[in-house]
Image (cartoon, rainbow, N blue to C red; front, top):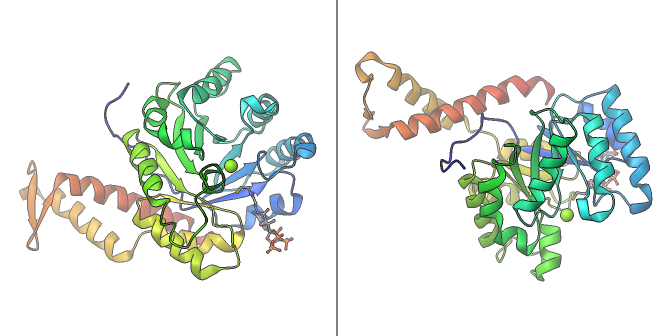
Length: 301
Ligand code: COA
Ligand code: MG
C-alpha cells in the first residue's frame, strides 16, 4: 500500500450535478449545462418501483448522447437487492466512475472492485464512495488508504449529509456548526489516501445566498467541489470552487521563477521578499493546471 499522499492528475470537480436517472427532462438538459461532472442517480432519487425503468432509460440515454463532462453513475448498494443489476447497467452505459452509496468499510469497495474485475470492466473505470453514515465517517481513513489497493479504482469521496443527519440526529443549521468536525475528518482521510473530496448537497435550491455561503465554507475547508441538485447551483459552485486570478498570477510567477537558470537546483528562493520553496512550486503547478482546465471549459458556461 502506498504511504504517500501523492495526488492523481488535476481534474475539475467544482460542480457535480445529481440527476435522477428516471427524469427524462433532466437527462435531456444535462448536455447544455456547464457542470464539471454529473452523477446519474439510480439510488435515493429513484423510487423502488421505478428502478428497472430508470436503469433502462439511463443506458439508452448514455449510448445515444454523452455530455461533455465527467460521467458518474450512482448505484444502489450491493445489499439492497438492486445493486447487482445497477452495476450491470452501469457497465453497459460506460461511465467514467461508479459512485457507491453508504460505504462503511474497505470491504464495500473491495466487493464492487472484484465484481468489476470479474466482469471485465475497463481499468479506467473509477470508483467514488459516499461517506454518509456514522461508520463511514469513523472508517473514512482506512477506506481511503486501502482504496488504491482494490485495483486502484477509488478516486473520490462524496459527503452525504442528509443521510448523516438522519443517522446522527444533528439538525440542519446554517454554518453546519456540529458537522464541521466530521467534514474535516473526511477531508483529511481523503487527502491521506490521495483522493478528491466533494461537499454535500444544499437542499434549498432557491436560497442562493445561503448556498453561496455554504460553497465558501466548503472551499475554505479544502473541498474540491460540491454535489448539486439543481442547474441553478452550477454557476455559483464553479465560481466558488474555481481559482482566483490573483492566485493564478502568483502561481505562474512562482513557476517562472523556479524555471530561471540562476534558480536551477535551488530548494528555496527569494521571490520579491517572500520565501518560496519547492512545495510551493508543486502547489503552483496544481493551481495553474486547474486554471488551464477552467479556461478550456469556458465557452460552455
Ligand atoms: N438535473 C438536470 N436538470 C434539472 C435538475 C437536475 N438535477 N433539476 C431540475 N432540472 C431542470 C428541470 O427539469 C427544469 O427543466 P425544464 O424547464 O426543461 O423542465 C429546470 O431544470 C428547472 O427546474 P425547476 O422547475 O426549478 O425544478 P423541478 O421542480 O423540476 O425539480 C427537484 C426540483 C429538486 C425535484 C430536482 O431539481 C431534482 O430532482 N434534483 C435532483 C435530486 C436528486 O438527484 N437527489 C438525490 C441526490 S441528493
Ligand atoms: Mg444518501
